[in-house]
Figure 1 (cartoon, rainbow, N blue to C red):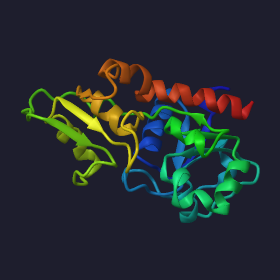
Figure 2: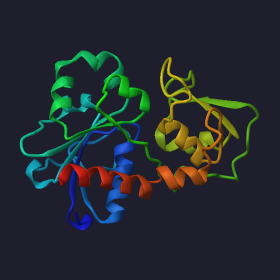
Figure 3: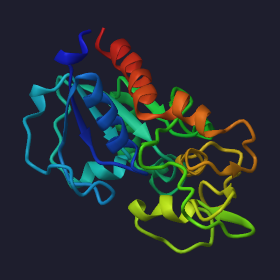
Length: 231
């Protein structure tokens, strides 16, 4: 498979992962499009596209299925599960069973999702380390930042998160309500990329994030998935 001939359509986004993977794939020479605007990447195009023009359709979070007219026929489908779509309210929907059976591969953002989707393949998230980076000019606060979807902290725009993270030296990241902070979430990767010591993940340095979850590294991992799907 030649990367410069690969055409990928991302449908939806969650935790900015699709936007990061798209940027990484584009950097490797692939052609990438979105079928809809995501709240977390508002600069992305929203033009309607022709589905048959793409080698792979990468669907992030099945809930986005209901926001677009989607054609399954004849396309290689990668289904990317991010958490609540597999764990709770959406778990019993018939559409979940249909999608799992239709997908060429089911990717799981955290390893615990194997309980609900046993055939799934864990895929570590990604971080734009040019955005999530240490900012030594920002004054540090005392204490440990409790952060993530499961924390009690206020919601702030994603583009402001690096500035908040850089106000602390340490963080404990809660991936979601009642979820174990040992799970490797995108929020934990973002904190480590900013140079914070992430409690429960002592190995997770910025260098580790760049090498394992930076956009280039994540895009190359994703190409390996696509190669298996297409071949």
